[in-house]
Image: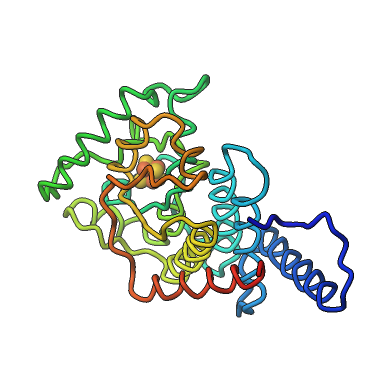
Length: 279
Ligand code: SF4
């Protein structure tokens, strides 16, 4: 698998040109990490973001490469959402949890990132393995039974607070609202159609497609999973992230979540472009 850099210096004009293109794409990706997704976004800028995620997934032998790629995707989304014109009106903050009762769709890297925080020294009270597994199992059961009103919230919501707030999945970061009362009302009536800012949700979809494109380009599947059932499986699997990075489908038993329209096409397109950079 090709890494982010080659130790062999380029010798032919074609190799030099390829090196220049890769350097430029990575610069564009770094700019997006600093400033967010440009608007309008050029294809090179978006591909550069995906290349950084792919670099993180593929380079080296660290067991936390998937976690690192998920962190990059989250940082890019945060920068993008924070520079939107509506940003000064966002009502979202740690402790507001009206949207924590809906199903959360995650990619494998995001799932591994969250699991790394569970039961470690200094974790918030309640974010232990046994307690999280029990809450995830209860939540999964309610999901399966189609319980809407009064169902348990996300298993990572502890005493009203997101226990992994800084590391929460893209599916939580992309749904921001400028209408607190609308969120309150939708939640009180058991609805999941909270009044989210469409542009932020769309940026989340683009960045998730890139992350999945990078996942496919290292040979894994472009699937999204429901957070609770994913947690229940990964918490019971030793070394899940390391094994997944080695090519094992440790999430085979987790039910897949339906993806938004055109997402599979978008993922296939980005993964094809990323793979094309390494032939
Ligand atoms: S991960 Fe955190 S923000 Fe996302 S649904 Fe769960 S508790 Fe809420």
